[in-house]
Amino acid sequence: MSKGALALLIHGGSENWSPPRWRERFRSVCGDRRVALLPGDAIDPVDVRYAAVWKPAPGALAAFPNLRVIFNLGAGVDALVADRSLPKVPLVRVAIGDLTKRMTEYVVLHVLMHHRQQLYLLDCQRQRRWQPRAQWPAREIRVGIMGLGTLGLDAAAVLAGLGFRVAGWSATAKRIEGIDSYHGGDGLEPFLKRTSILVCLLPLTPQTRHIINRRTLSMLDCTGPLGAPVLINAGRGGLQDEADILACLNDGTLGAATLDVFEAEPLPADSPLWQHPNVIVTPHNAADTDPEEISKYVAAQIARFEAGGELENVVDLSRGY
Picture 1: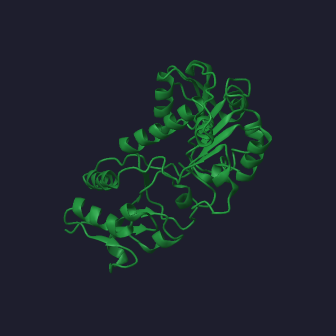
Picture 2: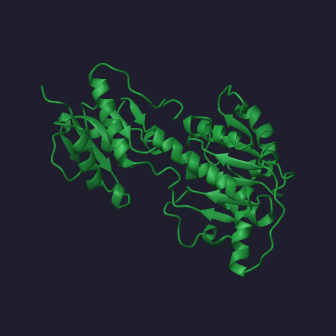
Picture 3: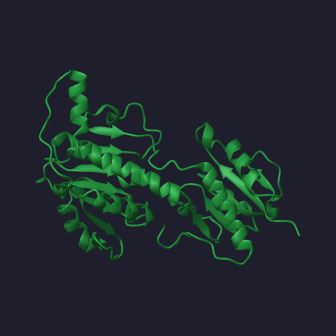
């Protein structure tokens, strides 16, 4: 009996993430399983049992009547969940150790850059000014992480190990040793008021869209040594109201921001965020994980599923993550 085919529906990406490269990777790890890159490769839709996707066109997955599992090649699944024609089969998100560690590297890097006043020092370098400022210990900085899933928990643990006073906020209650945790609507305001560096790693859902806005930013703590709070968003672009962020940066409500994700990507060339002196822009690469590991992960999941095992990291469609 032949194995069910794997269809690849992948849009965009750099050379390393290009659709033809994905086809090469999957063919190398899937043995004798048919792998078809659509729309170019010819395949009968009834033969497709699995789909590995990145930003597929809405409705595209409904073409496969015998589909059993969908694998999303990135961490964010909000666009798929919003597709009302999505087949009622398990949707699996990528959650591998490599991705988690890369996100932690990014979060720790940018927390440290703001903590150690790197924007100020770079400005001094450009102007050839030798004017060091006073430093302070990590224990005086209160970091708050929005989103306590796999990514948030790992980043929180590393930051706490460096001496930062770390708290987390999530939709539902979580108990984490050594980390103050807040949850739900009632917990959001006290969480924000104790936070001077806000790290956002939330999934994008109807409840979290534009959660980073003037109201939430104005609640952040401005009494710490940074003088004004800092935002780091490496979650999803739809979490932030960019007009509010700019306004808060310009009036001092927010002291600085690191933004890896944006409502429109690539970030338009005329966006004021590109040249704002207190903004670090990165091109949605906070956790640009190894594609080789992702293809192996998907192939292993399929093999385990066909042997009667459980799928890992299945999205709860009612919650959107």
